[in-house]
Structure formats: structure tokens, C-alpha cells
Image 1 (cartoon, rainbow, N blue to C red):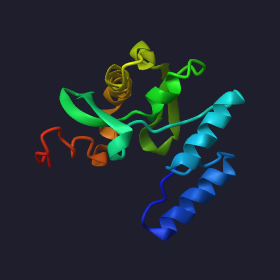
Image 2: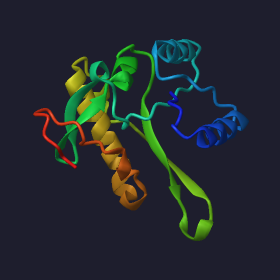
Image 3: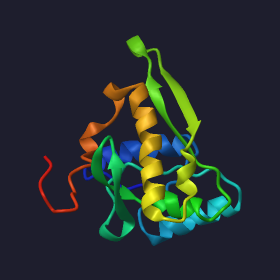
Length: 155
């Protein structure tokens, strides 16, 4: 799913790079979800960045590195459809500009739990597993903890 950055030049750059790779972009709305479901029905690979901060109705609170983080439930809902196998991965930058190493592992089995809270916690455990391999490369600016259950300010 794709949410255009606020900077139009960055948006053009990202769209161009992604188009060259053959990736179909899906907007972050109902139409985008329909695109994802259609792709899954055709047996295509679907990628979702599960550590983005979701809309009010699109998330639940789940533990992430020992803190409560408002976590997207889209991946959980897709996994509950019963057909997809879910993997978690990232591209690890190699030293001295020598490229990237793609690391992929099967997601925590709890992701298939019908309880969205349990499934979201499993997603976060899967992301944590990736982050622990290269914590300096995780995009901590996502501010996963900005939204707290008691409306307190984390940052």
C-alpha cells in the first residue's frame, strides 16, 4: 500500500523507482484493500509495511519492544482469510555501500489468530525479530509509540 509523501518531488521519485521494478502501487484506502484482496485471490505476492501508524479504525494496541504501540490490523485481517502465508523481512544495508542483503522469515504463527490483538502482537514480534538483526537500520522516526491508550504524550 502506498501513501504519497507530502513532498511532490519525493513522490515522483518513489513512484518512478517502484514502477521500474514492476510493483503495482495500491492506495491507502478501500480501493487499495480491494487491489490487495484481488492480488491474493490470483495467488500474487502482496507486501504490506505493518509498522506504519494506522487510522483510528485500522489498528489496535499491542506490545512492541515492551511498550504499547498502536498497530495496523490490515495484515491480520488479510492473514485471517486463510489463504496467504505471511512472511516478514527487510533489506539490510551492507557495509561500505556494497548493496543489500534481503532477509526474510516466516511471521510469528500468532498472526493467524482470530483475535486482532493477539494477531497484532504477533506482527510486532515478527517486526522486532527483524529490527534486532540491525537495530541501527530500523526507521525509528515512524514514532510507533506516539499514540498511547491513555492519550499521554510519549515523545
